[in-house]
Amino acid sequence: MNNIDAGSVTKIGGMLKGKGKFFLLLVLVLVAMPAIRGFLLTWKVIDPGYTGIKINRLVNRGVTREDIVTGFIFYNPIQSAVVVYPTFIQRVAWTQDVHEGSARNEQLTFNTKDSVPVDIDVAVSYQLDSAKVPDFYTKFRADNIDTFTHGFLRDTTRNIVAQIGSEYTFDDVNGSRKEEFLAKVGKVLGENIRPYGVLVQQFGLIGSLRPPKSLLDAVNSKTQAIQKSIQVENEVRQAEAEAKKKIAIANGEAAANRALASSLDPKLLEWEKLQIMRLQISKWDGKMPGVYAGGSGQGLLLNIPSPGSAGGR
Image 1: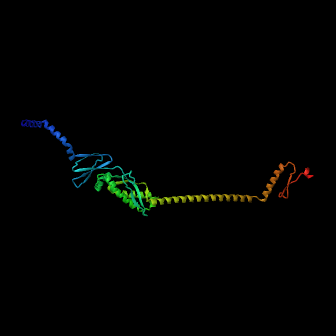
Image 2: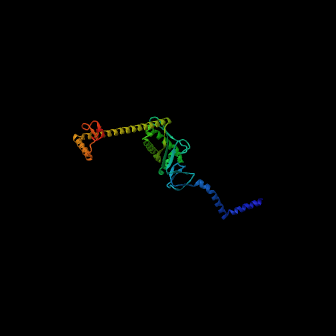
Image 3: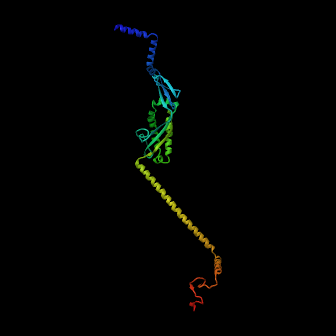
């Protein structure tokens, strides 16, 4: 046994000489490379639409921005870390509906100037300024942008909605000044988060405002009353118009009759009688009429038999 062991050792020692020693060393390096790479050198791919920042872990967690936006970033994982943020437009919806946005109720609530509590669903679209991403990380220390979205951004939006909503009455935000209210919230929100390198692209309302049910019923009743009043006013106007139309027609007919009567003077009437007489004479067949009228053509009409008839005997 001792001779075999000694021979084996001698044989292995011979293998370590020359080419055998080189190949053995190469195998050890290849086996150790993943571990060496993980501790001394690694990389991360930054896709289009993203930007990365390199964080120095050894010197006060300083932040240095990488010049390249896409491609590979090589870094020492012991000394540095790389955080990647999207620079394309992000959209978030905070709603009561658990099927849109988060799986919980995230509606925003504010009280109007006349102390009406109102619930609203909103959507915010924003974008990170790639040049200010290092400042953004230094401020929020968030490796995931969702932490900022559902933390600082939501709190800021909720506070601004509550502040500006208190400047309007419910009739204002539910009526003609709704767009003004939403535009003002979007503007103030943009001004508040722009210093952090966050640009608001859009702020909008999802659906309609939700006041208490009792107030909503009162608003509906008021709306129905206004519509009924408008309908009645229209009917009154229509009736007045019809009455004025009839009066105008009657006045026109009366004026026409007066004009006709004023035009019928005695000479014109005599002339009309002569015209009638001429017409009768032109049609007379020479026989005496069997009917005579007394006086000047007024009175009773009598049937007078002719002299040669039996009744005249």
